[in-house]
Image 1 (cartoon, rainbow, N blue to C red):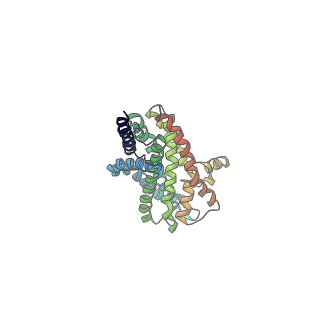
Image 2 (cartoon, rainbow, N blue to C red; image 1 turned 45 degrees about the vertical axis):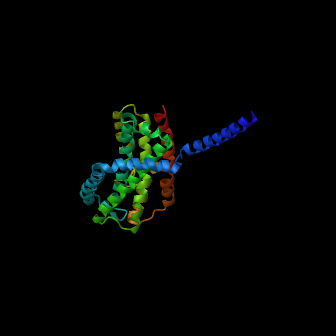
Image 3 (tube, rainbow, N blue to C red; image 1 turned 90 degrees about the horizontal axis):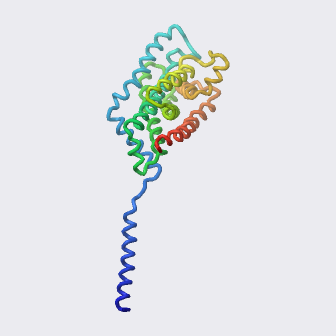
Amino acid sequence: MFFFAVPLCLCGERGFELTLESSKTSVRHVPGYFQRLVSVWMRHYVVYTNEIWTNAFPTLFEPLIFIMAVGWGLAAAVGNIGGFDYLTFITPAQIMMSAVYTSAFETSYGTYFRLEVDHHYDSMVATPVGPTEVFWGELLFTGTKGVFYSAIMLGVLSFFHVLHSPLALLVPLVGFFTAIAFGSLGFFANRLVKNISQFNYFVSGVISPLILFSGTLFPIEKLPAVLQAMAYVLPLYHFVHLSRMLTTGVIAPDLPVSLVYVLIVPFILGFFAVRCMKPKLIK
């Protein structure tokens, strides 16, 4: 029995080792957090660039038509503001509005369709990508679009001789943070709406007032004191204010406040927006 037991024991140990080796080789590598974010970004990039001109047309065309109509039409009546003509005054606001429109509509209507209609997110979370990476990846892609549209608007408007400082080249970076902030607001709206028609409240009740009362068409100093204070803390004011400093070269005393606001507030909004959206995906 001993002579039979020894080979059997040896074979058993060898078989156990082979089992361990095969189990080690069958373990799949899970991508890191950054890789998962990039994969979500790439998914949106590929889909968006398939119809890039169709998607880009309204975002670029509307602010451009607006600035030509209002900038040329009202410029003669308004005159100079802060030592610059009216067209120069509204230029940075129009550049930021291109980032606002692309981000707000991307994460409101676009996210709603991907979540509730096409169920793209369901297949995404079936991979190692989790809900946090899904929504942060989307916000980062939205920020990339903000850079892209801000750069194009900057290039087009440069032909109107409204850029008075080389610092204007930094404006697309402000567009990135603007898109993150308003993309986050789109997520908040997505969390609250019950159907797609309710996004009308978001567009008319949130986006439009923010655009009108954030120093885009006139200085907030023209507003009553209470509204001035409110405008100063609105999500859009400091993005426009910082962009105006960069395009004109006139640095305001509150530059540090605007810098801190632009660099920090979008990610605070993004953090809470992603937390709000996760329950809609994890049901």
